[in-house]
Image (cartoon, one colour):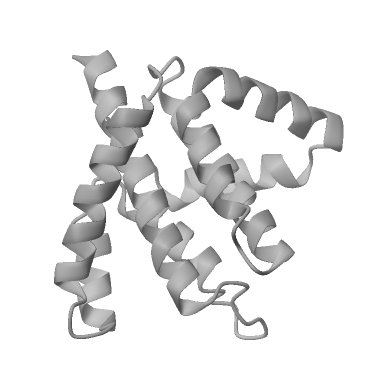
Amino acid sequence: MQPITDQTIDLINDRIQHMDESQIGRIWDSFAREQPALVGYVLGESRELAEPDAREDVAYVLTVILLSFREFRPGIPAISEQEFEKSFNEEFDEMENVFQDGFDESDAMAVIESFCQPDLLQFTAATIYSEDEEETSNFSEEEAGLFIVIFKTAIALLHRKADKILG
């Protein structure tokens, strides 16, 4: 599957900004039908977040991710709960190894740049860590790390499944 670029992410973001609540509700209904395990896992984990704004950030990032994949490859087969959990555990272990001595920005950039969808992962990290100068993150450091791994897992699985459609 081709990379999802910053331009695509900006286009999707612009579309989201122009939707009303009923349009967003319909999109979420379709996401729940298309990817029930993925949506259930991500939203279930977001209920544990301390800040309501962090839960909104999670829903927003997941919307951008799912709409971005739908833009290029509609009909991606559903990710099963078992697939997600297995991949999440592998991803979590890998990230623990990379950051075992603490967070290092050059290590983080290397992870992003070598990823199958670097722009989408960079967007996710920027949203979670609020790289806007005027805002602070809605996530604690631990929550941010967990959701980076969750979204990295989701993006990788969607990318893999999209590739299988092409082949």
